[in-house]
Image 1 (cartoon, one colour):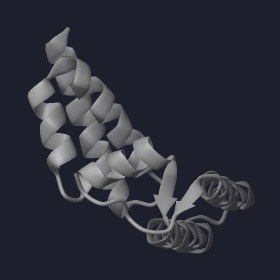
Image 2: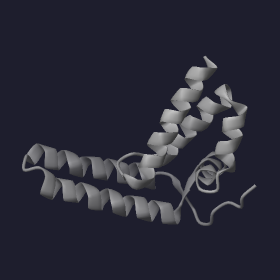
Image 3: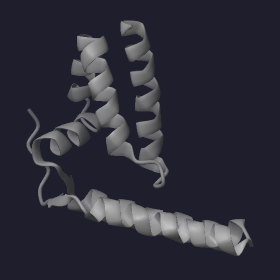
Image 4: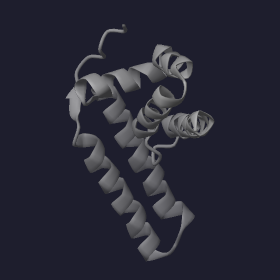
Length: 125
C-alpha cells in the first residue's frame, strides 16, 4: 500500500509541476494531494516536498492560511484567459467548444478568486 501511495504521490507531483506552466491544470490541489499521499506513504518524501523552496510554499501557505498569494492569483488568472481565449479563437471553429473554453476560464477564475488573498508570502519555516 505504501508503494501505491508513493507512486500516486509522484504522479500527483508531476501533474502539479505541469500545472505551474499550464494554467488549466491546477497546481495547488495536486501538490496538496501529493503531500497527503506522501504523508501516509513516505515521511522522507513528505519532508522533502515541504522543504522545497518553490513547491513547499504552495502547500504551507494554503494549509496555514487557506489563501493564495496575490501575485499567483494575478498570473494564474491572466494565463488562464490568455490560453483559453487563444484556444477559442485559433484552435477550434466549433461554437460550442469556444463557449466551453470561455466557461472553463470563467469557472477557473471564480475558483481562484474565491480563496482569500495572501498579501505577503508566509515566512519559510
